[in-house]
Image (spheres, rainbow, N blue to C red):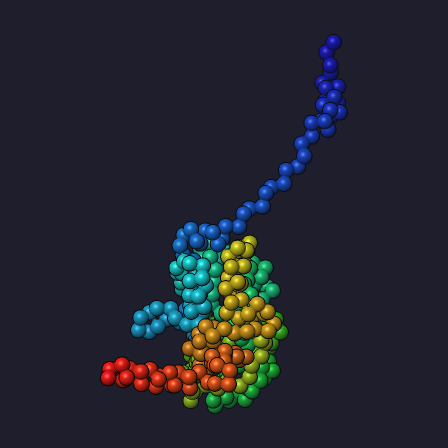
Length: 310
């Protein structure tokens, strides 16, 4: 007896649960970010080399120098690889990181919630703040960040930076003039095509120091933390960088203990000790300065040498 077509379908449906297959959960992709770097023998780093004193090109050697390259040198030495700095435009370095061209970025990048949506950050390695710079003549009489919020004020910023975002997020009515680099914004201020420039304090201070009779910094605002971005999910690399930074800054991010090595780099590029740095006391014998002990030992040694020659 033949089974009609629709009867066969019913039988299949009845017995299908007996042969159902449990859903298979895909295994998470292993993070090999650090292992890949070690295997390659180098870490590829994105940087915008036009933001002194954090990064700039040495005019004599064309080498990229600054605070950030020195911090990266410590990181690559600890990992045991070389590092390659790739100089690119501010916006470009982030798209290049996202596409996998770079392992990380070190370029005075402020940690923000918006940026954390597309990349992962290390812990902070530098504490900064925004600042307002004007020409000494200061015809618009700008003395605070609040004075910038006027339709008659033209503000120079580097496009895509937190200075740019600050004006936008706080609905400032000033005319914002974006530039590709902070140096171009400072030059525009010098030419008086803008009334002031917003940027990181240390970078604007570098511009002021280069032309002390031209510029003046009148206000600081918006404290910020710089971090080292890596691709989303590159946890092994990020955590290794964090461990290295902990050694330089102390493990408690809220109460940093700056190492001598970190302070030396800070002094070289910022011109003085980092705020809160406490140098280690000189080695002493209880109640006796080490320098005095060295002097006594030197004299004693000289006397012994004389006697041995007699």
